[in-house]
Amino acid sequence: MVVGGAGYVGSTSVETLIGAGHDVVVYDNLSTGHLASVADPVAFVHGNIGDRTRLEGVLRDKAIDAVLHCAARSLVGESMTDPGLYYRNNVAGGVALLEAMQAAGVTRLVFSSSAAVYGEPRRVPIAEADRTEPINPYGATKLAFEGAMRWFAAAHDFRAISLRYFNVAGATERNGEDHEPETHLIPIVLRVAASEATHVQIFGQDYPTPDGTAIRDFIHVRDMGSAHLLALEATGEGEPSLEVYNLGSAAGFSVREVVEAARKVTGRAIPARVVKRRLGDPPVLVASSRRARRELGWQPQHSKLEEILADAWTWRTAHPRGYARPEPSEVAAPADGDRPEAERVQRQASASA
Ligand SMILES: NC(=O)c1ccc[n+]([C@@H]2O[C@H](COP(=O)([O-])OP(=O)(O)OC[C@H]3O[C@@H](n4cnc5c(N)ncnc54)[C@H](O)[C@@H]3O)[C@@H](O)[C@H]2O)c1
Image (cartoon, rainbow, N blue to C red; front, side):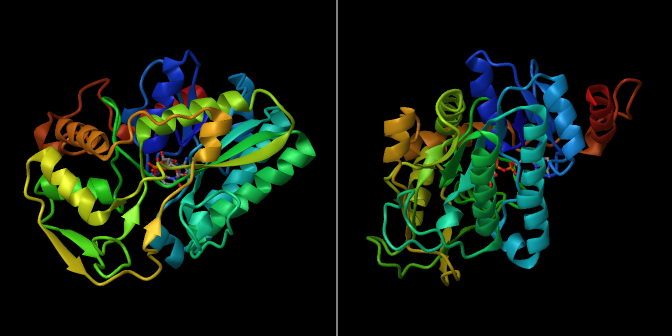
């Protein structure tokens, strides 16, 4: 079961899991995800992660043997102004999932954690054993849930893996990134390339980096899919434990390099303007993924910047409005059997309840 499987990372990982021959159930409340990203033969259950009883029922009814948990609120700024939303969704919701798994006898779990657990790193590349000191509620809730996983592993024989992602980008043919608001660099740059915004804002050009702009680590979403598959397989053996792995490329690209590469890939001008640094933006955030490579056998295949950008651009140009349906003015009045999205979700929800 992929919780949050209608979202960006979840939906693309579902493709990898289906490709590897697994049966997949997606459990999602569609708060930021898209029903259109869930396709046959995947079963969809419309539900909230905080609904422990519902989760337990689905885990039993669908005979689930492992869970990939990608559901979260994940906007740093929003977490600063509404921490309750983040603790309720990312921590309390996560604990409801753990309890439902325990009750249903499901003990294999892979979790989408984040580089935000490290806060401002003391050294780069960042390794898993480095100090974790989040500087926002988003990172704090990811770390808190890792703690819950660790104690469930000890008390209830869970075999759990937490994957700390750095920046995920790119797309598959079917699924891509469609967030509102969008806060990730690559889709923002491509919005400018598509003339949906006038320019890219570069936050600070006075960092101690070769071109003065901040450096970040990007992984192709396809490579996240293979990491999830390997991690899920790894939970099938061994002692109860929580293992933690960074997922990044160890390379890192500056914001200017990303904009420049996007100009080449798209053939568009992509105007950029330098503005002041943002508070809490470290100069360099790059992961050491040696542990994931060594222990999980993970080998990113698609994470060259040009490939990430080219795939994201291809998806974007094929889906200019993301997953959005046509504007009401562009479609005829609904006929029988042609129901609005919300109603369709409701029907699917009751069908799978
Ligand atoms: N995208 C990145 O670069 C990145 C980087 C680091 C960590 N992560 C983590 O990876 C995970 C997936 O990120 P994403 O970019 O795909 O986000 P996303 O918003 O596209 O996907 C999250 C999915 O979870 C669902 N969801 C949220 N709250 C829920 C709830 N209470 N009950 C049921 N479903 C719920 C949403 O509807 C959505 O489908 C998140 O946990 C995020 O924190 C992502």
